[in-house]
Image 1 (cartoon, rainbow, N blue to C red):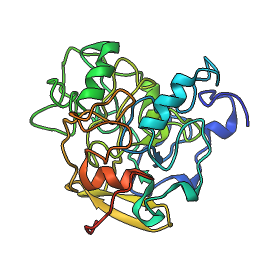
Image 2 (cartoon, rainbow, N blue to C red):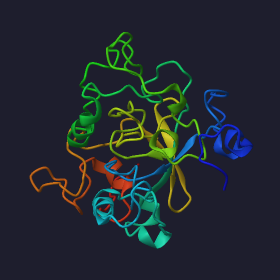
Image 3 (tube, rainbow, N blue to C red):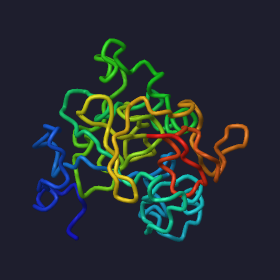
Image 4 (cartoon, rainbow, N blue to C red):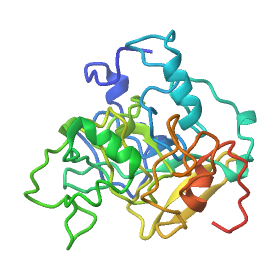
Length: 272
């Protein structure tokens, strides 16, 4: 349908759809196109989620992308792959399908706008090996921890890549979310949010976000949900037993992480 999703001349891409907006979010207008307050849950590991089964620039013949995807992309949705309800072996009532996200207001909110990792492109490995890397890089304002530190030396992401800015765009900042960092955590990007970046749910509500479960139930998840070891490397194809991040491992991110995986054989025995 239509051209690539950043094309503002294509009217559908710039059109606000009421069903994709939350009344509590005041974001509107440029530099966004048609905004969305809902993002697909891609699981508890962001690694290679920007490609999924294959990189369109390379094509489906490179089996390396498929191997990486099978190991890391454990959520209800996988980019460039069709998933079905039957794939949620952990149970639809135990698997998050979508999350609420706040859209960016241009106010340097760390939940909705990216600041480039101090190590640039190589920062993607830092983030993979420690999801809290951005939190520990002196980029967050200690007096206002929901905002980036004014005057920090690292660059901001492009203004056109605010959270939820394009409902038709499957890139990370626009419509992906992960159960790695807990709700309302800052986004963590390397040199570009189109690369392997960590985003999570966010909202204008006090204390948490709404999520849509695979069975259609809507639940409110608090920011304080049990979320395991936030410094543990994410699950990926090169993971190790020592790091508890080999393919098929239970989520390192506690109850929050387990709710994001579709088939990791984790038993949800706590209320959420």
